[in-house]
Amino acid sequence: QEYVGMKLEVTQWGERAERVKQLAGGKKVFMVAATLRSETMHGVTNLFVAPSVKYGLYPSSTTKGSKEDVLYLVTPRAARNMAYQGLLRTEDKVECVGELEGSELLGTKVHPALSEHKEVYVVPMDTIKDNKGTAVVICMPSDSPDDWITTLDLRKKPEYYNIDPEWVALEPVPVLTTPTYGDKTAVAIVEKMKINSPKDTKQLAEAKELAYKEGFYGGTMIVGKYKGEKVEDVKNKIRDDLIAQDLAFIYSEPENLVMSRSG
Ligand code: ZZB
Image (tube, rainbow, N blue to C red; front, top):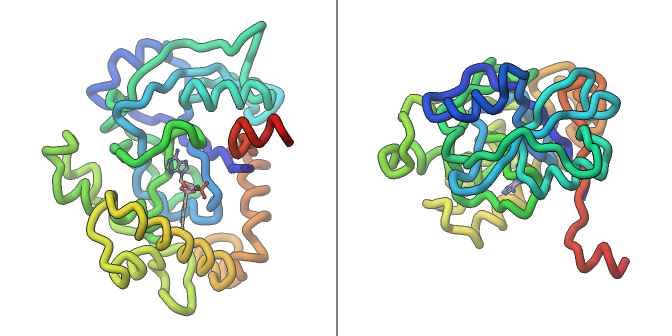
């Protein structure tokens, strides 16, 4: 699977991240989100982590994926993949500055490049899988049903999730329009399918599939440099622009280990 690793710079550590801030020692830190939809970056409203998942801080390579010496925040598993791909600084093994738990990051602010909102909060998503991508996930409520339903649940139960309601106050930002569902495809699909909770996993998988298809084959950009063009035609150009601007890199991982060994 080939993802785009989007780099979101930490602009302000939250109150729970004092220890992490010390670990970073004044270096720039980028949380890296694995995405298949880099064309939607304009509409980021939050960044998700899994509270109980372990993450680490890893020095970047300065020859690939980053022009400067920075720290990436991803899971140890993703770091191993990234090291294989030359994206991290390595000696004999993967260098790690320190480890942390997702919960320590809640309330930290990051800067999503090319987005309408210059700063967004890190908030929890319990359904993040730590065996896929970097376990850092962009929140794109206009085009991702999972992200919209999670945002609604966080707003409904801030005490339960141990977050400040202010952290999830941003509304979905339209980025593209589809003939069937309009400019907030995910919001429309969640409503139509009557999805009530992030735990409706079967329905959400269906909704995701539908939103992907609609957005890719039927979508037209309504913001940015490629406004008015078909998503299908500009998706790769947008990705390449992001990479050229040092805002993202290609990050791949084997579908699963058994397959990659026998294949
Ligand atoms: C931004 C975005 C905007 C995404 C969208 C989707 C959509 P896939 O197809 O299963 O590989 N994601 C990435 N890593 C994880 C993880 N560890 N656990 C849970 N979700 C994860 O899914 C890749 C997509 O799932 C990624 O693309 C990311 O969310 C999320 F408008 O990034 B996406 C209809 C989907 N729309």
